[in-house]
Image 1 (spheres, protein in one colour):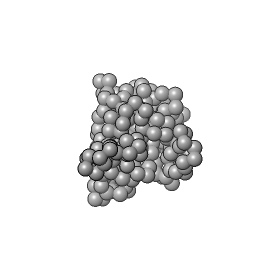
Image 2 (cartoon, protein in one colour; image 1 turned 120 degrees about the vertical axis):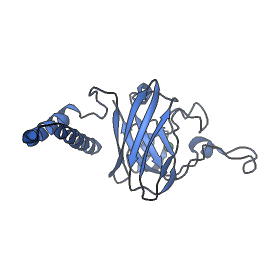
Image 3 (cartoon, helix red, strand yellow; image 1 turned 180 degrees about the horizontal axis):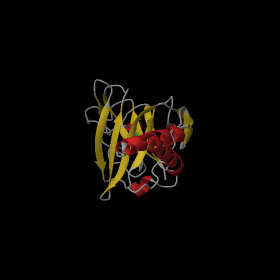
Image 4 (tube, helix red, strand yellow; image 1 turned 30 degrees about the horizontal axis):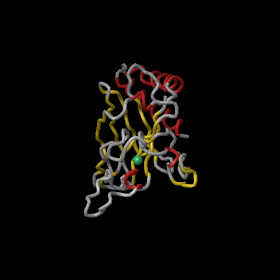
Length: 214
Ligand SMILES: [Cu+2]
């Protein structure tokens, strides 16, 4: 289902771009051939099409597309543009998660007793290397405007595109809540934040997910 959505989106995008550059008399013919080519040649998201940009379809828990992200190498760092709509206004936690699988109502691979939307994507990339706020997969939070839209570009040198495209892929995740980056002042937590906060930043449920895969 996800694959079909991505393919259709790519086909339309390519066809529109091609049509714009084509003499008017040939538009219909070019549209058809562009669609056929795209469908067969660009099935895998991120397939090499001459540039290294990976297009990521962002879906909600009903598997409805709510946006698109574009991930690319930026001189050894990773640049992510995300454009989405229909989201709750305000700040939302935004991270790379370890497994490129966005299944609603799924089990957490590290703790199968836990089931919820997009738990199949596992924890934050590099979550076992440090506390949250310094995870390699941590990203700047998204600020969704009052209309429910967001269109921002962020950059991190905590990971490389190659690491994101490992065997099990990676998921790009938007959470329901604000991310506190495990930054909890001592007056609230004299012995430091608890394990949950150190792991997740209390960003809450997972509401939008997108797969990065080879
Ligand atoms: Cu996350």
